[in-house]
Image (cartoon, rainbow, N blue to C red; front, top):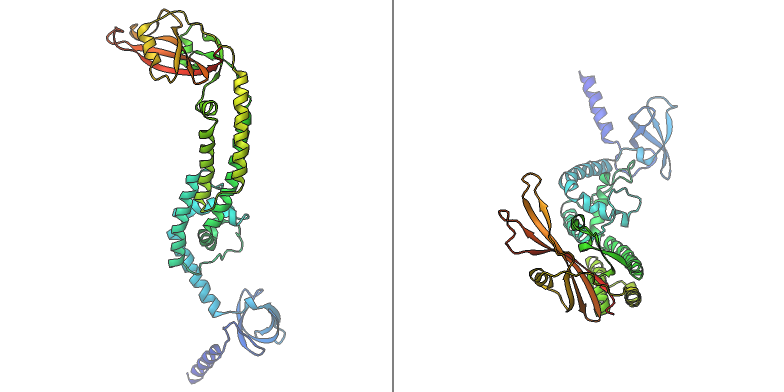
Length: 388
């Protein structure tokens, strides 16, 4: 009994002399991880050469092995690792579901090699939303997760395994946002210039009844037998206002990206605006040259219908008429009774220096088999022609 107690005390004394501090010298007793044994073994340091250390382990004099410093048990490192594991687990529980998408949207702007299934934000509101979330995450990291680090060594590119990267992206969010904004601004400028180039080749089309709506199936002639260039809001701005509203709208979209990223206006925008305005002038000239001669083929009239069709027109009405003198009636296949009826009307009017051909449908719904109620303009389309 006495011998056993003495041996136990000797063992405890020996264990207390084991150096687990991380700072070593020749002769120290340490715990070394011996890989072929698959465990830590009490050992003695024989030589130190930088991070390489020779140890004697076990009972045989031949049990000598060179290992690395990382294979010596370091209590401080073990405690730090345990704390990091606990911190990481708590972080994932609190942050992963809520902030993953926002981190994934911007991570590759800072760390291109990290995997993310999300492309950088393509809409300004997506960027501002992500930045708001990342500001919240940044505050959380600094309040509760100071020292959180990437501990993964195998999956170094897997975002869901890199908690330290999450906090880094949150802290550097504006840096990433500026890169996204610069990229999207460049893309938007290229796209707008390409779009204007396409507008510079206006298409003269055969005018379909009310822009090809379903009335074409009811309208025997199908087309109005005239041609024109579609009269869009951008064409209106271009031809009557020099494209100022269009340019202002594009510049506002460019500025929104800079503002979202907390950056000054991109220097390239000024040069873009000058080129864009020049191209708008070229488009205006091309459209004016492409306008076909005026044609008006409507012969019939309907006073009530034409009065409704003229409502809201901005400009001087030059001609008005109805394409057919008869109504086109839709009948219910179930009851055989009329449901609605339409006529197709045409108005030719002048707006500023340009003339517009409007095709529209006038529709009446049947009430108890009667069409005595008021009609309404169901649809219309405007097409540009020369005035003479």
